[in-house]
Image (cartoon, one colour):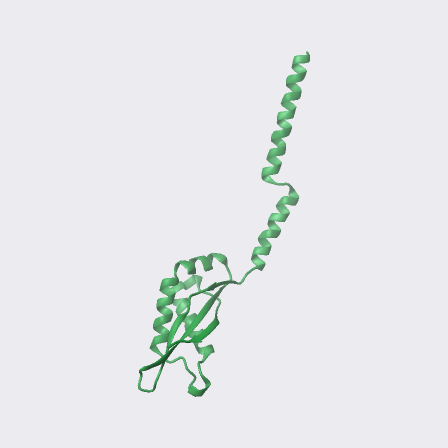
Length: 150
């Protein structure tokens, strides 16, 4: 009888440990609630930004020859992290589209004394990003830095 009691208590201890392990691995209701809170926090971290390496933009004379280059550092703004990840894979195509567009037409205001037309640049870059990324297109384009080259 004593042997049966020891076996029974050992079985209860093993079952108790297994149930504790199960609850620990699955999580208690409070742990599940905190996991949901973390997911909501991740949603609150949006928008997600992807900063690209500088893009060279030629500034031309009236004759069409290049006077100098301006370099723009651009950041793309996404509402989902998956879209940002996809865009990161597509950076070579994005850079190519951006460079072609920026090299093809002027980026200056009509009154050239006013300098670069940043609203126009952002609009053109967003259009190119939408062509390349389609359904994963960014919400917006931000110009982070600009500097003059030679």
